[in-house]
Image (cartoon, rainbow, N blue to C red; front, side, top):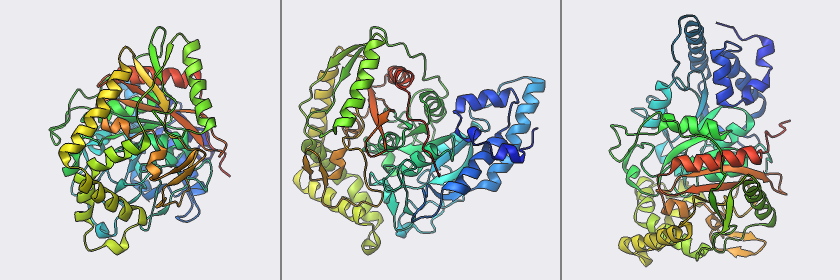
Length: 488
């Protein structure tokens, strides 16, 4: 086994390399998992900072345990080089885990005062699978309270900031995961998504996020039955994200709603020749800023030049209708669950959490659960009609270039096209939680005038994961992402 030297600890290029390259280097004994971990630890110690002014991507780190596991992984690679055999899929790779993905014996607070000091009794299924695949969970990432905002700050954990632009948010709710990847604090990360909580941070941090079809990745707890939600992977490349998705996916005994095989390769090429790809710049009337429109068009032109047929798509959607549809759903499921969970501690809630519970309750008064199903059905039918004859759909991830890191947005959000009553209307993600059998990969598309990355979503037909990753890989190859933020 190679021992990390001082020079190796200072080699931050190891901290930034893709997982696929690291695995090849581990197998060739060019460098060890311990060297990569030390390079990332150095970046954490130098750049993560504190809860008020730093990037603040983590709720906790577990570095001593991680060092031990990295050393053991290095020994395993030496043995395999000598004796032959295959390594587990993630052996030696660091994974930053979203705090909501419980780890047995460690805190599971979800940013809520009412959960302060709560300890997980067992590993979440995705944590279990990452460990079995040899992944090294060295840190746990921040989120807003109960993962219910598209910014990442809370009274418990402070403000998480975007490594590209500190006053801006990395998005939410998986903001700590996106920030950690962009800053080179981890190689892979876990996330979750009920209205865009994986894809929005991917868009704002120049990383890649995957919203799998409902049930493809096993979940835990009562809210696993909510058909809008899903857990998922984030990475710095499409291949890395597909790798982690393959480990996380598949039927699990603890979640009888989970399905499919585990460990299958989700990425098979990037040739788009002859594919018919729909293009919607606004998904109806989303107020997409000019630079995001142009970056999305740039992606579409690149795909067309590579042989795809780009088909303009019109959808009869409005942001107000989509918001009403999703909050009707939340009003009968997530909102009441949050209200029950936090009863008696309302005065300690973040303002955005209280607002979410209130808005969800109001929507439940306007619409029955059956009404909300009809609203879902209508949106799903319109998307199916728009995608008929297409292989995939391309659209922006967010309509706005950035959000303030400490923003509550209780009065909605102002855009160049006017005022939106709810700031979630600034993101083009929640329709695909309504249509939650569709796989969606979020990939970078460029930079905004706010010095924050922009992103696009690649949406495939229900359960067609291979197509979503195929087109996303082509986008990544044709329009390279922004790279890494120049941390001071």
